[in-house]
Length: 107
Length: 120
Image 1 (cartoon, rainbow over the protein chains, first blue to last red):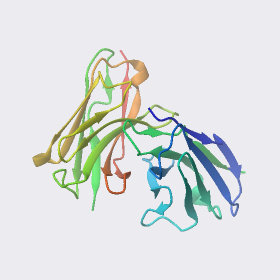
Image 2: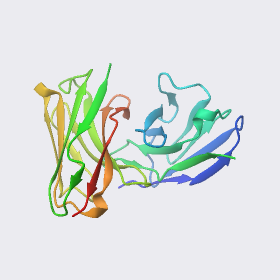
Image 3: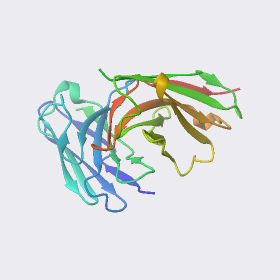
Image 4: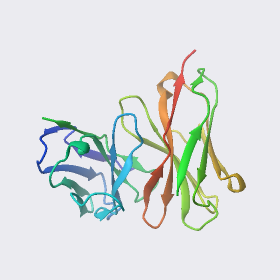
């Protein structure tokens, strides 16, 4: 099974900051990497699919990059509504797997 | 408009079998490339993928849970059912169903989730 490791586990930042979250796969997953945002008490929301494709309706301040084993999610200028927990997920092969999550908090 | 909704018991006893139903609209599970998965999330913890069923009835399971899980579909009712046997308190979680498209290879629509507590 493929293991996904995110860093950091938590992050404090201010409105307007540029933030980067990283995700590493235990083996190459090509570009089969997705990013989700989850707010408390809500279902996850797809932000980025195929490593760098922006899901329809998602603000352009979100971007993704990477291939193989190393990936990043970048938020170019944090907005108040962006504070949440973010998960990466590999869809290269079943069983699918998620990272442990990165909680983004207000500084 | 794509929607999914989970239904089932909020409370089950240890050793019982959990049966959850995902009722969806806005797409057909008989369309090539359409799939539905179940994902769970224990309180305060990370997401865990459980199972997937495809338009052609192919099925895939979590390695650690495959002996306890069964996924099935009723295309005419737009429903996907997940059963999990021998429930334990550590299985307490919010269970989500989500649509998966093989083209984009992502979970693009999710249900609201259902919290299932395992307790005697």
